[in-house]
Length: 390
Ligand code: GLY
Image (tube, rainbow, N blue to C red; front, top):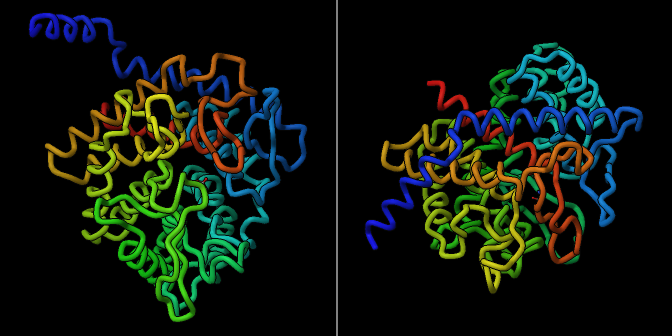
């Protein structure tokens, strides 16, 4: 028995594609898919990709949809990796479609939208006009912070259900605020981000380190409800939400150096890696509390977010934790880069990954490609590539 196991392991090691080759193959596929998408979208004035409909046709959105920044972000990452100025030109054009987002004050997603588009544009090209959009966006996001509550308000809808809803996803918008303080010298943005992260740390997590999706606060800033919106039920662990928590606290540790955020990221990582519902290929079911995790729909977007966060986290922790996180992320990337998840060349209107779950209960974007799955997948591939080059 032992000999069989050993021989199987040796055979797998011999046939496994080398990681560097796998990353280059996946990035090559991503480039051709992203160019296909860019050409298809170019004539559609002001539109950005969203998903595919049930007939496999491209669904687009206006720039106000929370996902508008992800496709420009994919293009910026692919430009950064390849140096291909044709990709940069597309990245710039699609980024500029989001110009009005800097003035959005009716939801919290400005950090996602501008960080992934203008954030990379500024980082890679350094034009002052990009920087100004980001600073204006941070100011818009900061209007949603109520000092009496100590948090940024996520949503304005469902006012009869939630007095002041805050969702775990909101952790992802904080990087823009910390950046704005560093760039402008105005410490207020960073203070808002730290208050938000601290209160999320206090109220969003269960004892096992899983998190609620929505926590609503009363007028005095006390928790009034802990619920879900996109998960299976109020006490379940919605997979992408766990990914946002892992990524958000890892990012806040990087941005602030506050070790309580690192500790929380490690707790979430260990919870995810040890979860009995996590399949052996590392691609979680859309909610970790589904009845049968083996047959439930998988969520490639959650896997991509988790993989990217784990690669970063592996660089902030001791060697034992770091190698476990990196090995798990590698397994996830190998799964996502298999034909099961990676779109075949010329298919899916240029999306890169198949099989994500947007909003299961609303039958919206279920088992479909999604721009944020693509974005965090490319980010994870590039982060892994950088690790290998060290
Ligand atoms: N931020 C919304 C979602 O993850 O679906």
